[in-house]
Image (tube, rainbow, N blue to C red; front, side, top):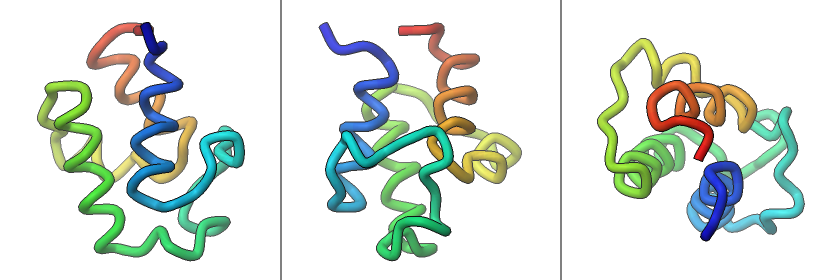
Length: 80
């Protein structure tokens, strides 16, 4: 069974077309050329579907890199 962190990396990799092993804690729009506003919407939607949650706007606004995405999902879903 995939751990929460691996699931998040798989979603990021799929939406942003990067290798999961390239995703570190500071992985965000500044280091991924394809992570634009449209990709961010697709990413949030894919994460909501994967984890069966609906994020609030305050949560979405803090989800600016892998570490913060992991923290928000961890609070919502447990450590996975």
